[in-house]
Length: 110
Image 1 (tube, rainbow, N blue to C red):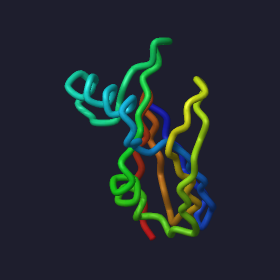
Image 2 (image 1 turned 180 degrees about the vertical axis):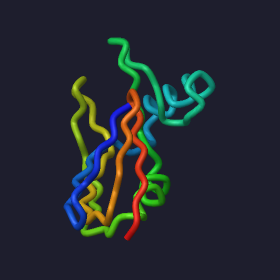
Image 3 (image 1 turned 45 degrees about the vertical axis):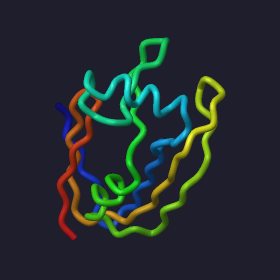
Image 4 (image 1 turned 30 degrees about the vertical axis):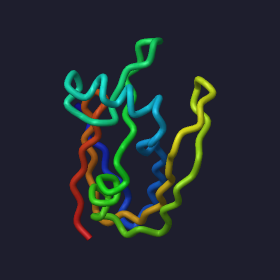
């Protein structure tokens, strides 16, 4: 486990993938939902485990930050497919991040 502290009033930039509503993605979200216990998490043929997040969950999870900008954008994935995504720019309060494996946990105060 690593613990990282962000500088008070620092700027945080996050970008990631959002859920998609096309048939190909819905099929794989449903295929792996039981295995990974999370709708939107799936496996690629290369062995990578990927997660597309629900926009409402993203916004709720990051509400402890002062939002400067949230913009939905289209990405082209490593396999050449179009995917929904976002970037989020925020201002931090006093924040500590704990990174464990592939998961990121944070605690903050304004």
